Length: 259
Image (cartoon, rainbow, N blue to C red; front, side, top):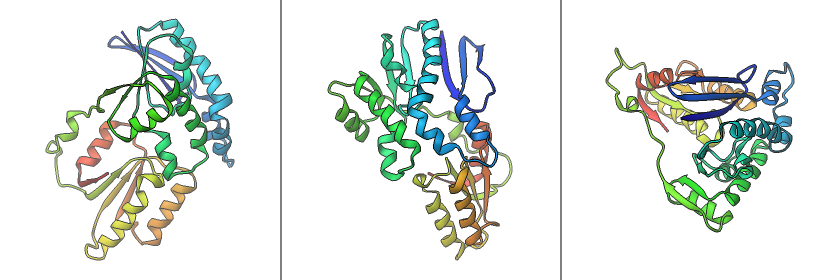
């Protein structure tokens, strides 16, 4: 039987439910929920200051309680940057860390305060865990820097076959380019907008989509940049789409996906 635990600021309480022999635990992130919902006050920087200390300890207690009640045969941690990642360092159950990306690499491009605590969590995990699912190359080099005897298993993130079935969308394509991802500088969103601005000189009717969550001052900056270049008729911002199927549909309705 599979048990999945995730942390969310989108729920108003903790949830547990079963479906197809899988038990899901959605743990409420009370602190982040409070920080995101305070009107007229930006508490995000304060949240990030305490993310790796007080908040991590609170979340870790809740997750440890679930793990100890389930008594699993093996624990798989997905990602090294989460608030409850160091739970693995406090249990004797066999464990493996599946790395999707590394804060150690992110901070080279983005020095945001929110990554400071996560970097500490990541280094603590990398130095104490034994088993890692990752890809060859720079990720292994970073792990070897902090860990004297890591064991690597080389697997890649699976993609749904639906991604490649591009012909099952009815009608004409409604945009030329589409960007999907978080609205942050390190993912190249500014380069995307600059490129569209240049293409517009030879293709005035170019249409593009931006799908993804931003928020805060950087989101405002991106919107201002689009206005400054007079691209409001060329670029449509969708924001966050809650359904994977909705995101996939918008991608399929575009001619070119830009990663």
